[in-house]
Amino acid sequence: MNTAQILKDSEDRMDKAVDVFRNELKGLRTGRANPAMLDPIRVDYYGSPTPIKQIANVSSPDPSSLMIKPFSADDLKEIEKAIRGSDLGLAPNNDGKVIRLNIPQMSGDQRKKIVQQLKKSAESAKVSCRNIRRDANKHFDDAEKAGEMTEDERDKGKDKVQAQLKAYETKVDDLADKKSKEILEG
Image (cartoon, rainbow, N blue to C red; front, top):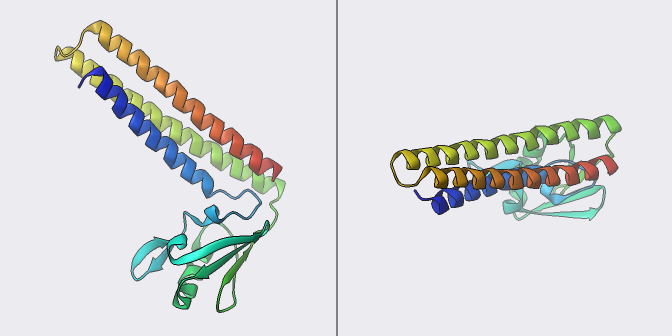
C-alpha cells in the first residue's frame, strides 16, 4: 500500500467511527421530543428486528410528546412492547390507532447522567479513531520494511495520520460539546 491508500483507508474508517457516534447522539434524550430518539429501538417485525420508522410514521405534535402511527394496526402491540423494553424509560399510551409518548422534563441529575453517558460514548469514538491510527502506522512500518517506501515517506505518512486523528478527535469533541449544552439547557 502506498501513502495515499493508507491515508484514504484511515480517513474512511475514522469517518465511520464519527458517524456511529453521531447516530448514538440522536438516541439520547434531551428533554424535548425528537423522533430520532426512537432510532435505536428495534421492533420484532415478522421475526426480524426492524427500526420503528420503517413500520410507522413518527411525529412530534408538540415539544413534549411523540406520536407513532403504524402503517398496519397489527404492529401496535409489538411497537409498544419494544418501547417498554427499551432503556428510554417511557410509558407508551396505546389508543388502538396510535401510540403516544409523553416526554417528561428531565431533572438535573438525569441530565448529568446522560451527559456522563455522552462523554463515555465520545471517548469510545476517540479510542476507535486511535486504533485506526495505530493500524495505519503499522501499514506504514510494513510498507517501509518491504521496501515500498523510504523512512522519510513513512514518517511523513505517520505525521499525516496523526493530523487526521487530531481533526477527527476535534469533530467528536465538537459534537459532544454541542449535545451536552443541548441536554443541560433542555
